[in-house]
Amino acid sequence: MTTSTLGSRRADDAAQFDSPIPRRCADRAPLTPARLVKAKAAYTTGRVPLAPDTRLLCGEGTVPEPGDVVLARVSAIGQHKRLELSNGRRAHLFPGDEILVAYGHRYAPDQFLAEVPCELGPCDLAAAGGVASRVVASHTAIGEPTRLEPIGLLCGADGRRVNLRDWALPRLALPLPAVPTVAVVGTSMNAGKTTTAAGVVRGLRAAGLRPGAAKVTGTGAGGDVWLLRDAGADPVLDFTAAGLASTYLAPLPVVEETFDLLRGHLAAAGADVIVIEVADGVFQRETAELVAGARFRDAIDGVIFAAGDALGAIAGVSWLRERGVPVLAVSGVRSASPLAMREAERALDVPVLDLEALGAAEIAAALTVETVAAKA
Image (cartoon, rainbow, N blue to C red; front, side, top):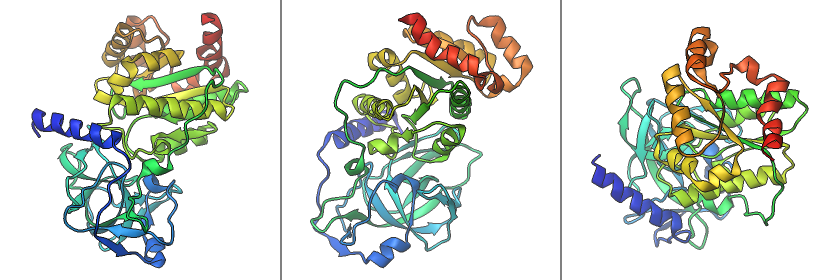
């Protein structure tokens, strides 16, 4: 893909996110409740109720938009051999299966780069959580994507499309309770961000606090949500609750509104401390724009940076500080290595914490409640 094509696509998506939901199409086909119930419904569609009068939009000229829910047939099994259902179970996929997934873009350096196609034609399962898209690039270690044949977009009897945005959490009235908030960001995909966030959650629980957690960017999948919940966070939300299958190519205002919405609902639910995970690395566009922005910086009390090695930790801490983001500590996958931790400790003036330390009550309290008290 050329840079000009990507820029054009971003402009198109800004219009899609800003447009009223959604366009109607003249070609509508009936969809029996039995067929709808039989389809395997993905995690991304978990908030969408399936009405008995649901129909299908199809035919020439039907253009998918991010968040549209599509009934698709599996035509060939590839990289994703299972589909994560709304309850977290990973259901085996077979050729001919009909599945309910949501259209969305994907940015995953260790897997696929994928974009919503411009027509209702053959596409790919870009993420096991249920993201339909068209793969345009992939990591060399990753196999061919599982192929899908869209049957039609879900719509109501009036032709109004079923889109995840229709079922997003409501905006909350202000003001909301002031709750200590710690964010976890990192160098890249698979740097240990969710593991770090789960460690912080466990420490907060050990300190007698009730942590709430949210993943505010990324690609729709439940694995990180389940881990944070299992670690003791309550409640746990992600961007699908804000009506997004993915945040890749979403305009900054949409990402910031998602951040505010999820954080607000955690505060309103009575969380003592909020733990926010921001997906991918600080060089990824949506992550970089969010973390560098004043709304994010003003809302958080500090960042724990997850890095794969000492050099990544040093560069990440420097990047954050240049943008006025306070760094509380460094952790990540390499924090399990005493040698890697020693390298980072020699070069940094912030604590380098492994999972055992993150899970200690006194350290978790110092990173959150005591930090806020000291700033006040």
